[in-house]
Image (cartoon, rainbow, N blue to C red):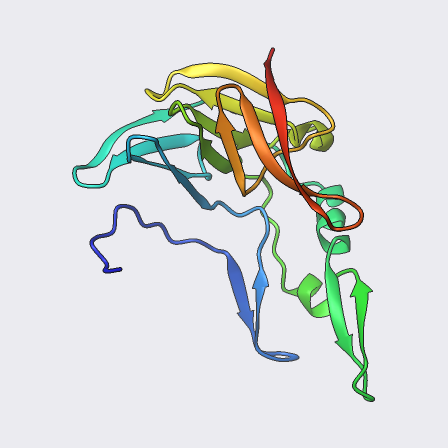
Length: 203
């Protein structure tokens, strides 16, 4: 594989590098990111989540068009912060060489994590088999947030909000969306993988 060219570039605040108690990169949550996917005809859909703007690029010609969508910025709450830290699992190495897992963020991570006041517009982009663009927006209701997409036609026209039927949740990766369904790899309590087909319902 050889480098051809850069289609899109954006500086991001993803990590903070620290040197005490040791060198580490501390992840910075809720900061804008670049999300992208490839369409069936080979174009690339790119969105920078600081604003709700999505652009479509031709690999040879560059930017083809872009579109915007209205949204209401959502504040980062104390509950969001506590949930983020409490979800961490940290490996602790004892003097005798034994290793244990401690739940919750250590003090040095809490100290070096900066939260923005507002969440980005979205945190994921997926393109389905027909070229429709699925964007996962943040919402006030965090439980409902896991099941909803904004759907756009391949020309950027807004189709509507789509709900993934419970008990399914937003498929962050390893998912294929085809003909009104999405296929997702899930693991059960015994860590056995299954491929499950979910229907997509329009409001």
